[in-house]
Image 1 (cartoon, rainbow over the protein chains, first blue to last red):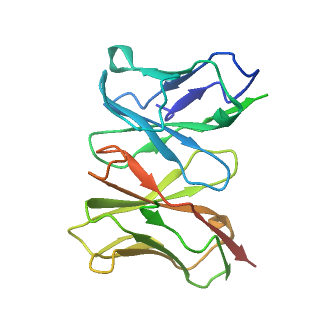
Image 2 (image 1 turned 60 degrees about the vertical axis):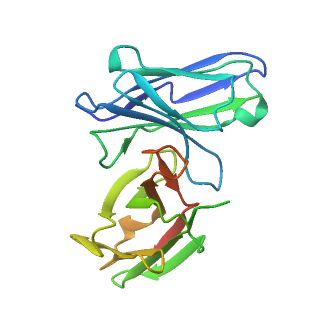
Length: 112
Length: 115
């Protein structure tokens, strides 16, 4: 296993368009997290899954954001009607129970 | 309201000397602390962690110290090497409102190792 994989690495989209990102966690990890990082800030927690169940959502996750993890494997994060303020690095991480989380390389979103 | 604070945006240390990175937290519900290292255009890489039941954890050149009464932790790197130049994030986990098991991160400290 090569670690957490995210696709795409970069995405440029026009304001108002929908975008979807994919994350493939480390295969034996049952927990999957999404974070967002903007310039000069640390990653900010968005949501997390234990297997296929979405157990926690940050208030940062507006109703334009939705995340799924069908069958408890890969996860997708969709942003509808993108806004310029959505421009950020979107990071996915996975962990085995409550242990250290391993991060992917992120998807950099630019909304123009 | 920042629950995890790294008050030094940058730190410059000579190669071979000790690097000390500091982190303060405000939420007493945090019970697990981690340090991550990040290079540009990459995701954070896990370095070392410590549970609140301990006050020290060591892994090779990296040692993390936890002072619960002061709500303070520090990462010591000795000896510092050029490859240690990166941004270091302190993170905490617990029932903090940031997600029961999600991590709350500081803003990071940019460590620069000078030859």
